[in-house]
Length: 266
Image 1 (cartoon, rainbow, N blue to C red):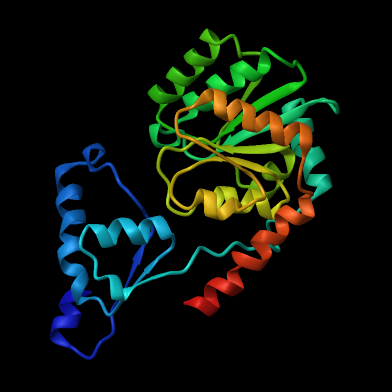
Image 2 (tube, one colour; image 1 turned 90 degrees about the vertical axis):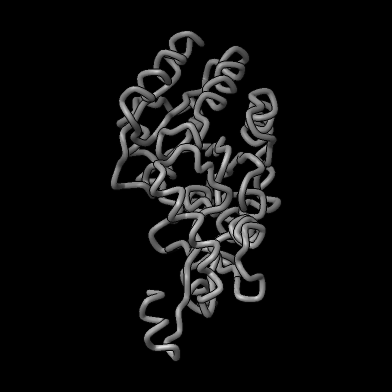
């Protein structure tokens, strides 16, 4: 793209940023060099669109020209992601969930960045207090890492409480099956998972990373990173008090993070 810019200076170049703080030590040498090179080359772009405030601030700190960077959040298809009682019953039946049981889930790639161990530790604390809860982990990941999480589940005596589900194509139905979504990530930019769950009317507990706190606003609970006790307490609050209705939770996404708002902003 920049070669085109040098050859045809009148060509307008717009870059996209879809990450925030990245731990480059997890990537190979070529990726690290390429990523750092973008910091130097960003001055040649005419505009830069970041999908998160956290991504904007991080990249500006690394050398991106502040005056060229705008934030346009991701857009959620609220016609696809919406409350659906029938889909809720279908998925819960497939998971073997009984009517009186509540379901708390994490959704997304099983990786260290998503910190599922903290979720499992919080689930263990909660399971000691009440027996009508089920916890579901929806997503795929490296076999070795998945095995380590299953071993942790056994050591926490959570085996009978946790459901493991591979990645699915019917994600609106999956979100509807949950009573509460948890995002225990240690790094995020803009989390589509949180926004999609909220569009389905599901309350969320999120860690204070990236734009997650901005995304949930006052419709959910925000907790510190790697803190199972705080996570467990926030889960209890939303499960027991239900301070906001599904309609109120969904309205925030419809009004602030719709596809239409994304298109207009772009």
